[in-house]
Length: 71
Image (cartoon, rainbow, N blue to C red):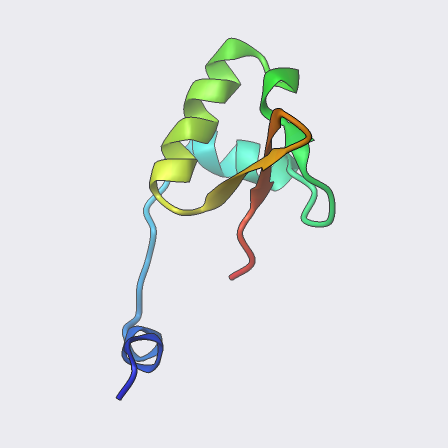
C-alpha cells in the first residue's frame, strides 16, 4: 500500500481560526497572488496557513506567490 492511499483513508481535519478561514475564502483558486500584496497581519496569517499546508508558496519570476491548495 502506498503512502498516498493510506493518507486518503484517514479523515484528516485541519483546524483553523475564524480569521484564517475568512482569509482563505478571499483567495481565488485559479490565480496566484503576490505575498507582498497583503497587509502585514494577513501575511502572518498566510504564513500560518502555509505551515498547515492549506496554502502553497511558489516562487515565480523572483517574487513569492501564494495560492490555496486544492482539497
